[in-house]
Length: 73
Image (cartoon, rainbow, N blue to C red; front, side, top):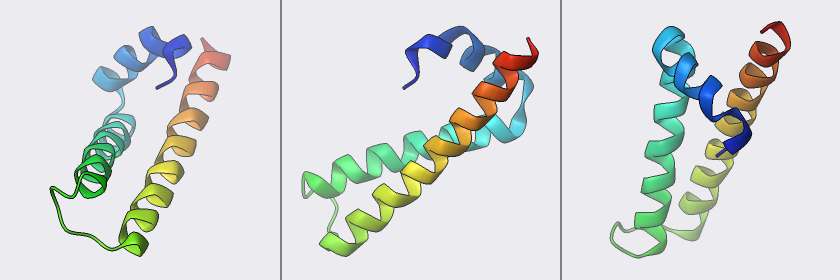
């Protein structure tokens, strides 16, 4: 996710607790969605779609933080 911001992501994960929380939650949701789609974890189609939407919201929030941080760097 966001390979062009790899260094900034590493930096923010250690200096910005809010960013780290969002990043970890995004990764947890990603794994949860993979498990649901692979039928490792039982879930309805609606639950999978809701998780994907939540993950997308988190990704948008992460991107906004990255853009702001790179503009001020």
